[in-house]
Image (cartoon, rainbow, N blue to C red; front, side):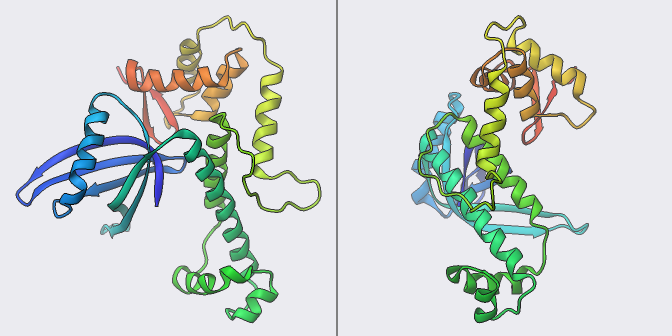
Length: 272
């Protein structure tokens, strides 16, 4: 299952019939999906979404699909999803889903790390601290994937929580991993950082928010773009509200075309 904002959607004609391809963008990147010609039962719904997209509407989707991947000769791996079900969701539902997913992911990562010094038997894994409901799946996962660096996944969790907290949705009962001592959870750390930054700002910005964004990219882009959080922070420090900064970034990218997003969450000025 993949969830995010629709980033691209188009219809294609082939000898075998109509197909549809699209991109869903979430906090970790862009995911390619398609609706095949042999799935005519999905065509009316995807046509409706295509009509909305072509009119300029951007919306959040949840999609369930069959994962596909292939490896190139040089070792590159490309993934996509063949859609089986999809639906449009509102921001509140998506925000809660992000937080629930972040908590569940952290729980599995903690279980994986706890298992690294243990034998791959149910009794040994439970003794090492792996929750009972994760034991069977962890044995299968360890056998299939082997060892991997969990840090990339933790960064993805942090990005998801940052997006959820930045949406201003009220999250009252989101589960979170236990923290030892007085150490804050990831969600609390993001909240405290945001609150601390906003509290010290003036409320009457002197510089236009678009000007702040463009100047920040011009000054800080060293070839790979400037990340989203840096742009938002620059706007906040200039006296603008976070929501104003987020809307301005979207407008400069999607409407004015003054900036581009060559990779997820990194922005550059439109080349002259």
